[in-house]
Image (tube, one colour):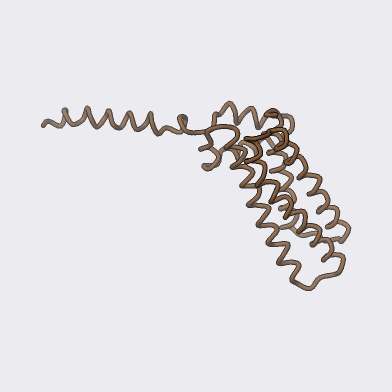
Length: 179
């Protein structure tokens, strides 16, 4: 068998592999991502494009799966900050700071649960999913106000609150036009 004879089947297999496994056949539609990130409710278009370009989210087949993946990421980030809050509560601190941390812990537990609900709810009732994700930002404000009242300024908590607001805004923007 000549090398020319082997080359044709190998080229065909290579070409078919490129077509079958190309990112465009399995990834979230770029038009969808652009439309979502340019939504008026999304305050951070650049961050949105970055978030929706991550390997996990690029593999989404439709908007429901995309929302679910992003909300799970939001829940994961909220859980990490909740762990920080719980560790801070174990250390000696002022009564005002402890009260603020307890308030924030409640907020973060609620937000983790809400983020986890949005994806599954979306399939059954987009309006309810949108409503639930819209409730997250006011909860974050409760934590922010408690921290301010206690004069507790912590970089990790501030970052966590920013992330909660970001993922809430992103979730809202992704679900607002689906209901």
